[in-house]
Amino acid sequence: MFISRDIVRLVKEYLRPYWLRMTLVVLAASASAMAPYMFGYLGKVMVDDVLRLGGERTTGVHQSATAVQHTDGVTDLSTTSPSSSAHAPERPDQTTQREQIHLLLLVFLAYIGVHLASIGLTWLYSYNIAYVGQRIVYKMRRQLHEKLQNLHMAFFDQRKTGKLVARVIDDVNVIQNNVTNTFINIFSNIALLAVGVFILLRLDWKLALVAFSFLPFYGISYQYFIKRIRKLNLAIREKNAEIYGLLGEKITGVRVIKSFAQERFEVRQFFRKSSEFIRLVIKNSLLNNTLGALAILISGIGTAVVLWYGALMVRNGDMSLGSLLYFYASVGVLFSPLIALTNVNVVIQRVLTVLARIFAILDEEVKIKDAENAIELKEMKGAVSFHNVSLKYEGSDGYALREVSFDIPAGSVVSLVGPSGSGKSSLVNLLLRLYEPTEGYILLDGHDIADIKLSSLRRHIGMVPQEAILFSGTIAQNIMYGRFDATPQEVINAAKASEIHDFIYSLPEKYETQIGEAGVSLSGGQKQRLAMAMALLTDPSILILDDSTSALDGQTEARIWETLRKIMKNRTSFIITHRIRTAMSADIILVLDKGRLVEKGTHQELVARDGFYRRIFKQQMEVKEAA
Image (tube, rainbow, N blue to C red; front, side, top):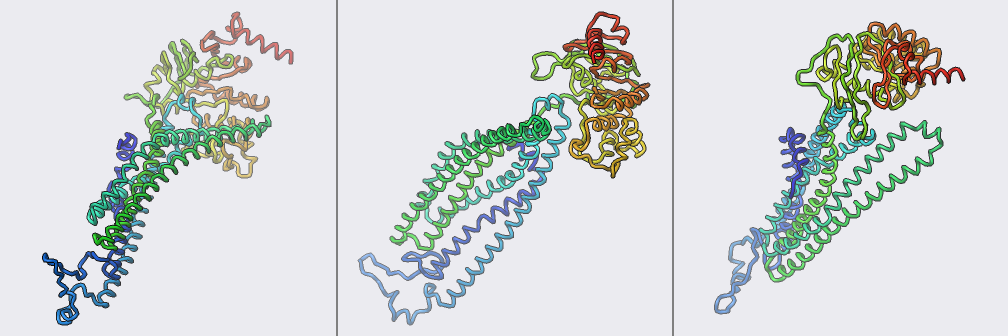
């Protein structure tokens, strides 16, 4: 049977560290699986040697008396003569009642002993399976989470959050529930099958061949169904991840759904996805059950033929009744691992599908990482230079940025101006090295950012995004996210600088107030001020404000800008804005349009030119005058 590379990898990376424990588990599971054979043998002893129902031909230490027919046709009955038996010593076949009771007691104790041993072995391997399974799941989830933290932003741009969550939670759960049990079942069933074949051949090789003649039908039925089952398992996993993605997206956007009164539409959409999922599961179940039913049918027919042929052998004196019952019990056990192995292969197909999805993430190339000799910058002045920088996102036909070049002296305040989609956010994303330039390079204090350690680079850059991202936890924990070693006073100072301290102190639990998932209990303006406090606490050399005051009221915005002007002194600041009023006070204004840098200069210089900036300025002034 073909062994998938994913299975080999699973064994090498995740199971091999526990090889000693797994060996113990395999031995315990295999020994426990032999209990039916032991019970079958004890049944044979009970019938043939205790109850003496063995018929003409008996086996074991007790042989029944038989008449001896000489070659001349005369039958010698002397061995059965009452007179001779009276004078002869007691023979082995003349088992006394006491000996039978003694043998019955031994069989009884053996039954109990086998049961106790089976229970003990089952407990032993069940505990160890759980132990190994949990260790595998822990390692796999930790690796997935770590990999997701290190992957580039383009990876997340092309995938739904819910689908990634499904990989980490749902797919790994499939591994937890199936891998270790499946691994043990394979070995224990193979051992059960091998022992069964040996026992049947020892009992009667002719009858064994009759039983074995039905085995090829298992392989034929399995090969017919398994390809269809494999495709369905893949479709089920994909549909399940799609539902995860849909749920995550709709729960995040529940306010939009309610504001547009689209609850019915979302219910119908989820119903359609769920119905598709159910249809796939039912079809998969139908194929699996059909395959299982065929296995049971083959087993039933094979067992019936064995009983028929075995009964003839008992009738003809070629086999004892106890041996036939033992053979019958062993055949039942023999077919059982075949059915189990068929089901194991169905499980393996599901596991292979899941492993492929998990390993696809683990094998994803980390495109943005530290160079081999990356440097650590203890201090950063903040001089920024772009040299013919172009950026093309994965899967996109056009460029987000095209041949952008500029030099920003340290400590300058820079405004990025331009219509939506002009490349403003792309530019600062490159500065943070969330994406790599398709062409060109970027210098910070004369160092190529590709040669600076990512942790060092991002430690010196603080960003306040347009849509504030907060985490469940307390207000203090969110502010300290960039600096967990900050003192309480530093946290308070950052909150004051962001004009959020007074609000926090109005809350009953103040800085220990739980804000809920994604800061659900806060307004948009409060979220942005908290995000600003997070950035300011790190005391960055470069500060990026991505239209970060857009959700604030006029008074709060004015107060924050007054604070920001003080904060931005002696540090390089990039302000992404659509408002010319905000851009006017910048030392340098970069005007972007369709991914290109079309103008650069101060407000006065740009207004004096008859260019793109001047047109935007006029439009906004006209709107302001009209208002």
